[in-house]
Length: 618
Image (cartoon, rainbow, N blue to C red; front, side, top):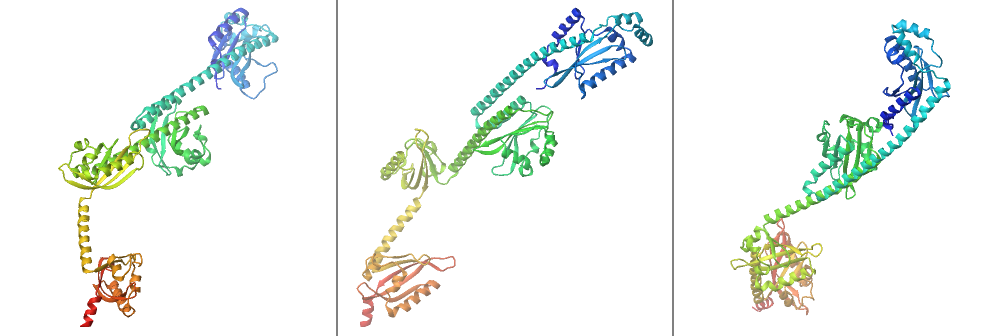
């Protein structure tokens, strides 16, 4: 604890007491603190104050006396066993002095003077008056008022003063400690209140205002701990760079935020190691940094920093930055209690930053969804409880022919084709009961003008926290044209199947890349097989060829595979009962590779056995 003697005793009251003591007992006393300030002066003799310390020659002797005593008390010399030193000045008077030392601290010097041990030699003083032009009678009258003490009396007086002063100082020291402890308690309580207010304010702040909240908190904290700069450094995610995002400076302190952008932390190895390994970074004297911190020392000195403190900021157990404080006007001593409380503020900042980032990401996600929702070429809608339509996008309005306001007054059933109502209701009931979270279906919708439109529907159900209503979002793609194409294709396939049946032809389909092969039912029938009795493959076809026809038939097929020309061939194939039937095979490549090679082959088999027999008979 650093203090001065004037901090420990009530000087005006003590002056009154020593003045009264001098008036009653004629005991003079003086006390001067170590910086030369006169604290007490009772009974100082007129011969000294009005003569010796006024005339230049005698005043020089007084200063020599003062210097001697000062050198003795502030040097390494030991005091005599009596506990004080005495000095007879060249002006003929005696001073006695003892140091005032409390808890090892030299605070002041206690003087007894001026006095004499025996009646004065008036001839000496008369000569001195003549030498320096003093009024002899007045000068000698002042001399006769100088007290004469025995050595024992001097020791008793100094001992009394010392003990008396010691009592006062001890009482003052206890009082000072009490006041200091009380101030520290008040400081801690005020600090805790400030931190609580900051925490509460961040809880109540909208996330959009958290950055301004950090600035306000930095200002309050900087003023409270008397920091000249208060700031936040945040690291780039997963990177080795950091930038000052917030800074508040005391009046007259230059801002440094612009110079603290994209700082490469790998250029500050000592600092980086400290913030990684320590919960708190504290540099009480930048000038005293070790040689391994030379880079940091030069950087901080360039910004005028004399003392620096920083606490980490964490988000999800990851250190994302630093809450820092600088002092440039003077060196600061921030104790562990203060640093630990700043660490608490760092945790508050981390929570606030995490909330701001989370809510900003949510807003961006919602904005992104809104943009997609509005700009999507696919119809989209959101639903609340049941099947009530909440929001629709322009694409769905165009698809169904309603305005947005009109659709928001309808339910799913209102725009569903009557024949699809039962299926739709069942799907919704299952989702509402929690049996499914996703629906994929094709269904028909009724447009405002009464026409029907087909939609490919994908619905995702979103569970709500607590017991809130389940919400859902649906995407509806217009597949009317596709359904029409499918209908026409089905009709075409029916007509083809009927034509093939009438013409007694079997169909085969081969993918040359995957080997996947298809034989129609008529293909199997003309050979006497059921579909599960004969593998649909190129190999099974080749296996059933007549030995005399196999080589030519395979060569013709391979040539077609290589060149892709139209294919027509006659060959015999063995039936299930071992007989051979004459087959007319025709084939076309319906899909080709980029190089023009056949990829998918579609062909027919026609049983021409009777025709061949008829030609033979002719």
